[in-house]
Length: 285
Image (cartoon, rainbow, N blue to C red; front, side):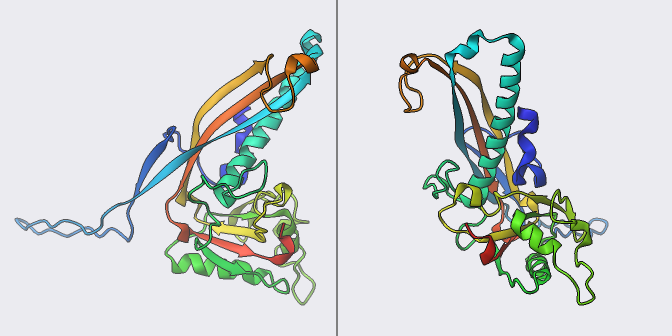
């Protein structure tokens, strides 16, 4: 299942960092353009200006627990194999969505509520460049998002789109009836728009989880190199046969078994000004 964990926005648009460790990992960044000094023969050398900024990633643990009738243990091998393959796919989806929802919205994926333990996330109040969309001319949103990044010294490497907002962009037409973004088709399976990479997922708005903050986020254009993330620890799938592991009753009494997966991941936002957040009321939760 680990091979399929990159299906979310963060995994699709941002390369993972294998050195993320449980607890915290420090990342150092420099601002400004480095200027080399021309030194004449016998000339003195001076030090360069610029002190590195430090950002520290924090790790978070997520878990998925599934209950089954204990009779599944006595099924034939092919049935059990199909079950585990289906379960692995759901775990990969759940973990990739969790990484998105924590890193983008700072919420507990199970509840949609902002989690107090998440100290920083992309859409946190005061972070990034907020672009308030105008539904009449949504193509202007992309121009404004790009201009904000360029003004901050960043170049966009990709854009994350909510499916509803991707559809709005796909249906936007010029006065002659031609589509403004013909490469979007109907807004499904989008991987590129306006010359940059794109990824579509409803974790952008968090509507599927009912994110309580009513985000209204339709898109996030960014230099996605400004976020560092990675899997710090995978806890192998394990079988639970006794007790009440999830508050749903004693397994032995209900003739059930449980299978649990746990993942520890971490991320750090190096500079929130590398993110332009497009908000549109019609994609609100």
